[in-house]
Image (cartoon, rainbow, N blue to C red; front, side, top):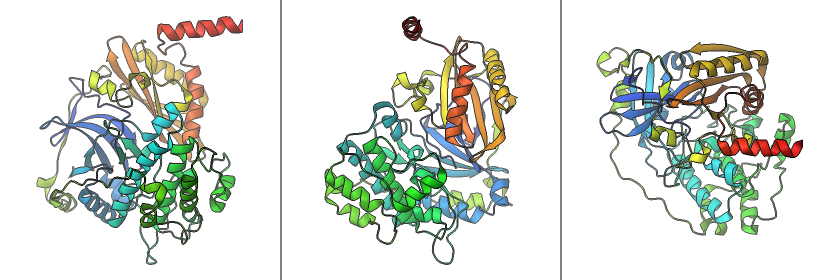
Amino acid sequence: MVMASRSSGGGGIGSSTGRTRVGRYELGRTLGEGTFAKVKFAKNLETGENVAIKILDKEKVLKHKMIGQIKREISTMKLIRHPNVIRMYEVMASKTKIYIVMEFVNGGELFDKIATRGRLKEDEARTYFHQLINAVDYCHSRGVYHRDLKPENLLLDAKGVLKVSDFGLSALPQQVREDGLLHTTCGTPNYVAPEVINDKGYDGAKADLWSCGVILFVLMAGYLPFEESNLVTLYKKIFKADFSTPPWFSSGAKKLIKRILDPNPLTRITIAEILENDWFKKGYKLPVFEREDVNLDDIDAIFNAATDSSNLVVERREERPSTPVTMNAFELISTSQGLNLSSIFEKQMGLVKRETRFASKCPANEIIAKIEQAAAPMGFDVKKNNYKMKLHGEKSGRKGHLSVATEILEVAPSLHMVELRKTGGDTLEFHKFYKNLSTGLKDIVWKTTGEIKEEANEGAQVS
């Protein structure tokens, strides 16, 4: 499930028409999509604050018998007030949807730092690990387990403070059985604990801690401890904890990581033991908490609103714009990591994850035609809706059919930003798809004068 509060997009609320309002919030563009939810940027019209709203489809929630689970998870998440966990503000519902309003964080993903700079220095990695463990420990103490800790769930705010997203909401359909263990395999394979893959039941706290160990390794090494293109080979390595630490790791870091990445959950180090570890304690600061009364009345009202329409909000949509949604300067900046404008239009394949974007000076209609023309021969079904497109792969891949959402946004009268976002399927297959697609889009991608000169020089050297 995709979580809110990503840096990967401003709201697209610069357009004078085609706006959608839900209660006091004006909805902007989509930040992410998952099986059960869609996440949108939004603005609180009363305070001017930017938020992220997770929108759940009531019909899907009922179909999967998830109402009780969602109510419990949301109630618990609303009670969580921790500086390193994305904050949940309120919950609303219409006749067909549930809206979860959350903190919007615009400092980028923590792992963008590795993509752009390479591995982190040990002290910097340790500081982020302090914040991660603080967040995980706090949530575990309240019976909330993440179950899918991975790079895209670790965000940074404008001050560089780590924020864990999707806590308690990452695996809603899961249930704890009579044996007190979770039984549904989920998560990103490289970060998942061996007992989760084994599917014999697992302790959510111990599984989360394994993922924290993988994350610490990646921060310090710049690569994964378990990395194989073949899934069976990958699982074998995870089951045996078959990995080696690079020579630049200090002995203290090596020992701690080996104790966290213990394939036996019964002998794996606990968070209480980590907090007493000499390597971990260096520079450690206790988190500072907000003390605030939390009201759960809105959650009870929403989930008891089957017969009482006074508790429901109405989604009001104005006429759709006949031009692409316009982005203002703030929204454009928020698509980059913090205020680093050089990363707005990513060109290096190393930065392409679940989404990528490029700039074009061509008219929007021409961009759409070119994308359609390039995607069709690759076996993709194309559906268009104004200046948005859905590309759906006809063949099933490693994780089902690859689906890509495309949106064109107007940055200036003669400049568009084109965003391609994976909404289904495998991320590696999305990488390959984008690489193939981009060869067919060379003519429409905007290049700076410097890039044109650079390409010309490379061409001259080759000839």
